[in-house]
Length: 89
Image 1 (cartoon, rainbow, N blue to C red):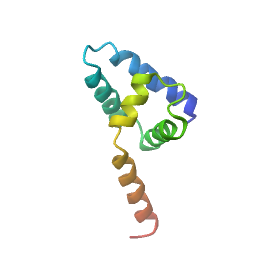
Image 2: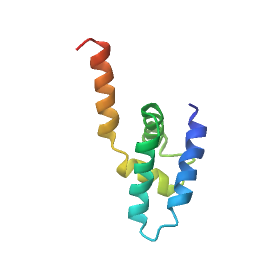
Image 3: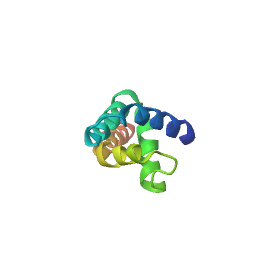
Image 4: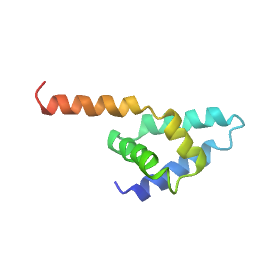
């Protein structure tokens, strides 16, 4: 999926949660929503965008949510599993 589309989708999620009075909880909920409903490849792309491009185009709350709460370990574990499966381990 194109990163521009993922940015739009992530910002739409952020628009919903940013009205929460507790911004810390809002960030957790943004990341939780992405973790639950986005495919692994989509999560990998948006996390890579945040890490490589400093979240360019993302609302600050969304970029912060992804960098602070979207579990990089989740992505690493899935990549490791896929690599092991591919290598027949």
